[in-house]
Length: 251
Image (cartoon, rainbow, N blue to C red; front, side):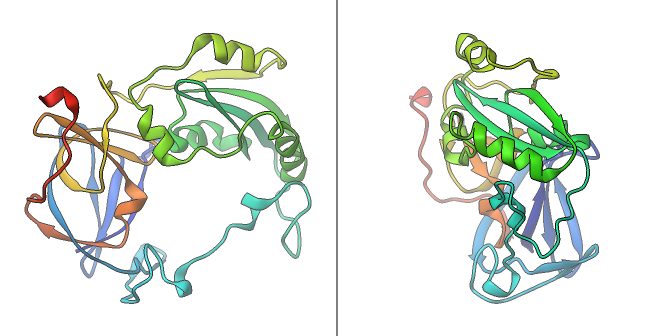
């Protein structure tokens, strides 16, 4: 059985899940309290999907080989369309997302999926700054704001601060030049007393998920796994017996 994808549950259509395939596609749901008992085996390309059908691939590239790696050109757009023909003719939201304690990221998304996009990223707070008529204008505004705010927060940085809360004073200062259309405060259903240990594993009790970060508890230590880092691994039943780093709180 191979991990071939994941779902963050951000849209509210279902719980966070690992997508697994062993000839047929299934979902390993990850609500809090779920016991995962898998050991990670070999890792290879996770293949592709034809609708709801998983098409496997044995090539060694991970999480995807060259044949199954695609680049979303819109992620590199700064207002000059990189496609043969511009197709983002719908309202877009420009937002500022806060990641504890004081990292503020500018971004854009289609207006109707703003809340979902913010939860996909695991944002702690956010502000809807502007709504514009198309993606080109949104990307232009994003590029301007990226001179002041970052436009990328990597998962390891999110994991290091998963136990922290947003610096309210810094957040107010960040928003002071704007008159937001709306603001958001997100809860993910769990709290941590200290930073989790970063590990790639699928063994332990599910504490919760925040964006694509899966938090597991094992032997008194909280571990955080980027679910994308699980994609491509073959899963073997039975909890891992490899030695894992423990948090200081366990001693």
